[in-house]
Amino acid sequence: MEPEAVTAPDASWPLVIGVDGSAPSLRAVDWAADEADLRGVPLRLVHAASPDRYPGAEATVPPPAGGVLADAARRVRTRRPGLRVEEEVVPDEPQYALVRAARTASVLVVGTRGRGGVAEVLLGSVALAVAAQAGCPVVVLRGSHDSQAAPPVRGRVVVGVGEHPAALRFAADEARRRGVPLEAVRAWRCPAYETTDLPLAAGEAAHLHEKRAAEELHAALADVPAGVEVHARTVEGPAREVLVDASHTADLLVVGARRHEGRLSPHLGRVTHTALHRSACPVAVVPHGEEGD
Image (cartoon, rainbow, N blue to C red; front, side):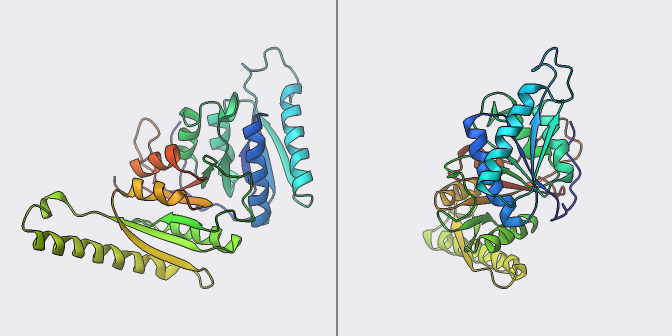
């Protein structure tokens, strides 16, 4: 399946979560219910009911699939009584069902460590493919997500500030909704060939790279809406390691993902790939158009 075209999701569209009936999946439903409530949008529960999983089932909604959705919907209504809940069974494999559901989603949520269906091989083919292909932001609930998007547990949203503003805009909105600070991080490195001369020259080169990173970070933050408390910092080191470290004190880590047209398979950059595998908190992957590699 080719990556979906990157279009700005409508903020009023439902928040979509894939459910499979497992305990981790239901914990993810709790998180998604909180997030939908924060956004003031409906929560759509999607269960992928591949014909191979329900052999011989002729009903439009096979009984096991209907039970999975009913259990999840009851859980949501108990937790968030005023939240509008939609239920959908899709006769397809989880990866394809969720990518299609993302076309009319404000955000797509994927749980971890479930059995079968959506969460079976996380972080394997399903979650990575969905994060790489979906046309809307995808939140992967890994690490200790505490089953809730609000109230905040650690009290901050962290974003890696790179070349494209989409991730920063998303992170600023999330911080505003939660009423917590936004920690904007810009990683920088001094190329090895610039540190092989005298120590003084090496120090001057590092200072220039750090200064440039600080200037780029300051320029990017100019578009953050008023009312969002911003903590800006530059950190020396590989961006993927810097962001994984920052995830240990965050409720949500936000990273960008480029769309690479013409690739024969889904692709995520090293920073996003590392965050999805090693983050200590949920990771929001925000897509944007191709800008090179």
